[in-house]
Length: 441
Image (cartoon, rainbow, N blue to C red; front, side, top):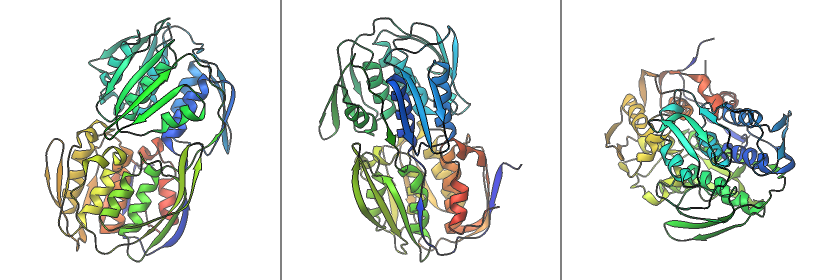
């Protein structure tokens, strides 16, 4: 079967409602915390992507049983610090940065040697940002020049630490928080603003956590040693997956879309704030709080006139996974858009800041790129009539899906490789796109 798709026709106007699969960040975090609980935890609407399946398989190798059913997942935890596995166990994180970095935090107490590896893309990413703070707990790590594969040897007596997280990385912060659970004492974290799913789950589980929010940093205290009760959970839709359809609806002529039951955690809604600043119509309906997370329906209407933006850098961390899509919106703006302090984009599955510029340039949009910023010279009348090929992007699922959206709204004849990449985060993406009337071959 060919590992590419072809698109040669823009999408027709649509008026639809959609439901999107469960949030990937929450699916992985739920599984990791359930592994530390004593007893059975049950989750509905867990994302059935390769990243989540890799999480379950890694936990199985660490002695945690699970039962993945048609509509739910059960995990049978052994309690805090009770992994049961053989010396030199090999864990394969696949493509998942969230899994690979967070699970290291749970291994600081494990004295048997563990090897952690990943695929070609994950093996290019920086892990010193996680192993360096985790060393302070007493664990030892042998890395491949700061990258995977990693050898882990934990300590019998992990000690609490003080940690200053400067990158705005929820993965780094969460890894340290999970490690803190294994200590006898209180870990102090000063963290640049980033996703707050781990803090919310800790609070929901009634773990010993205190969070003090300030303008640029959150101050977090985690007291270790407390047992974790089972967590029954129903995961809301992933806003990072919804983002492809938000932008598709916004840029498609005469279209309307309602997306149901979306996680609108304020640390994840940067794309909504940025698009509103650009004049996109987004309504939030049926708001509710579910186990500490904000959930709502999103209503998006197409927009002909789009404003350029000098994007406030304070919104970066809350939109870090969606900038490829935001760049596409900027391509149709009347004027120059400017995005800065985005070096973290190049720490993702591929160098996404570079790929954002590449895609726009292939479309005929002028950009000025630096190592951490991009200027985009929008063209409200953009209409592509040439052939475009997208390949060699380290199988980054977001590059693939963003290219599909670009093809459907801007025209041209596109050949987009590595369609299997969507299995890591959004296996049903193509079928969802087709359900709105897109012609994809």
